[in-house]
Image (cartoon, rainbow, N blue to C red; front, side, top):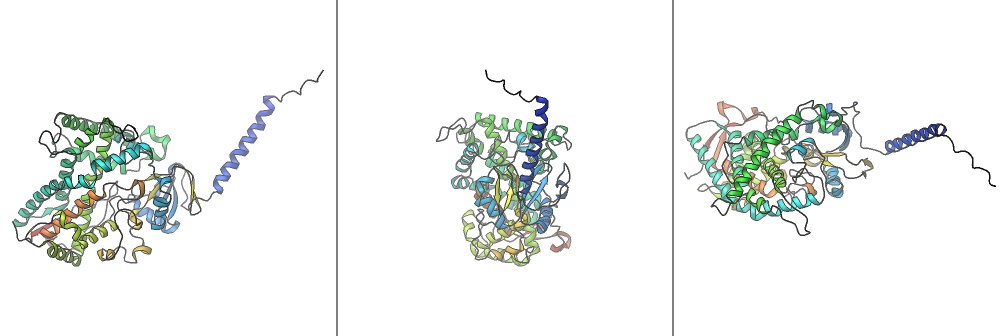
Length: 506
């Protein structure tokens, strides 16, 4: 008969053994993680991490930190690890070499509320759904043919602005250029997206401004999740209110478009009509593409991308032209030689206006609309330049700092000098990482062509049709060129100026 097996150790004896093993394993894994070299960065506080270092103008604060810690820098934003990219060489690594690893977006409270659980294109995570949304927007809304289709609309709206400014010039009235250009952008956006003039029933401008504030804000709930239920900043309540109001507006507009489709009712076909015609369809692989909620999320993306961006670029360019009379004179000379003074600038003229293109590029270099681009999220652990980047780290590309990198742009980086783009192959498409006004890679802005035509045409018209001077004998050197930070980067002050008409037509 076999002897009985030895008694199995009691749970009382095993517990300390398992506990010691677990502690040792935890310590070993933690030490292993710490041994992996992460990018250099400043020491952080408990809970808040490095949030206190961002200040009111984070693009400037991050540039200052990068001068000390380098172009690939790590921060802790609350409990979220972040990597700040501040040089063209580093940007190329993240946005081209390893683009697919950093092609996703972080999930933030604002996009969950405003974008119907990130169902639009701008803030959704990388994957099949995003590819379907981008394909839809690129082919159906932002293709070259669609951009051309809205040419008459842009010409009509811009013509009305010129007539209004011509009257102000005749009366020697000071014009709020910020208000005029901003309203023009809104009018074009309303008609292009919704097919109508601004609607007094809706305060869409106020809501979009609120969206910009909420998306651009550093929401503590996104960085310290355990504080989210307390809604310390009141952002959750504002998001709920704004989301509800936007949803009601979109539902009203979509219902009215369904009752009176564009193209059939004599009304010009717009983006809402195009999206509704795609509803409940499938792509080539029979994947479901778009439903009513998707349309509303895409509409918010389109409005946010077009409402303020073009006017922001123009309202940085005009003050710089006033501060640099040599550049203004050279631009007006090009317009006179290519267009003449007996007609207004047309979209067909734009490809010949090379100096105008340089002025726009120099404006976007110094004043990128989105100074920190739209943050990305790391999809997996990866090592770049010897630095370990953890999965789910937030990747922030400081386009503002890159545009002012003295290694790329020489020592006079702060001066407005369009000639720096003379005989240069640098374009707007994100292929040149020293110049990223529209981002780069998979998550680059798909509306580059539409945005550039709008900016170029408006700026060319304002400079070609009018001379500009500041009121009250104010010197251009006295212009306040400070900015405010958010999802976009507008000038802090309104631009007031006195136009004088310079064409030979009325």
